Amino acid sequence: MGAFLAKIVAIVNQKGGVGKTTTCVNLVSALHEAGKRVLLCDFDPQANSTSGMGVDKALSQGVYDVLINGADAGENIVRTRYGDVLPSSKALAGAGIEMIGREGREFLLRDALRGVAADYDFVFIDCPPSLELLTLNALCAANTLLVPVQSEYFALEGLSDLMNTVRIVRRSLNPSLSLEGVLLTMYDGRTNLALQVAEEVKRYFPGKVYSTVIPRNVRLSEAPSHGKPINVYDRTSRGAEAYGAFASEFLKQNS
Ligand code: ADP
Ligand code: MG
Image (cartoon, rainbow, N blue to C red; front, side, top):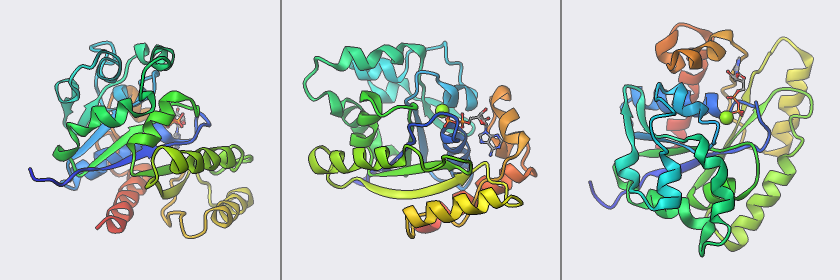
């Protein structure tokens, strides 16, 4: 392992239910299958991507312990058949408050990931649905952000707040933070609404919207309860095909 460091990508959108966790788990698993060294850092106290990767979220405090108690990130990483996971746990919900008095509180995650970044090609951070201190830590640790947008009414709502936050972070805390891309999720190409939303999102983020879109697919919503990513749960499903195509597009952009 040389001086090469992983690209760290934060998967962010302060809206809940837009497909952050689904994208994180399935992109990580597809990249792992493609032979990339990947780490999923679950940074949401709900720990849905932890369990989605088949890791028992009650087993350890994972990223909370690393952030708050200075535990070693490497020692807390769980190796799965779908890629490595730095798990989350309910304890993380209290971390925002516990960080308040700390010096350099915005950089706790960045500093924690430093020790393991050389072991990976990509690290993905699954963010909670807010723009508070946890997400701020993710934006300070990341090189780029990937924004899943649900192809629904009000898709753009809140994105100006997100991009404002990104501008502030760039100005003061992480000048090199850039936009990796915007992914349309739960897309139903048969409806005018989805087409309209796609147009609007492309106008708002010119040149940044992936050509791959993720359709609504029930297999994607079933897979987490089996603790398996979609490429393992049902690899012939439309959802698996879409996330496979997305992983290829992502890799092409990063080659
Ligand atoms: P977030 O992490 O942004 O809150 P999730 O990835 O957890 O969003 O998705 C919210 C819900 O929608 C979950 O129940 C998930 O299984 C489901 N879901 C996500 N993407 C799809 C999709 N493309 N098709 C069908 N269901 C989906
Ligand atoms: Mg989530």
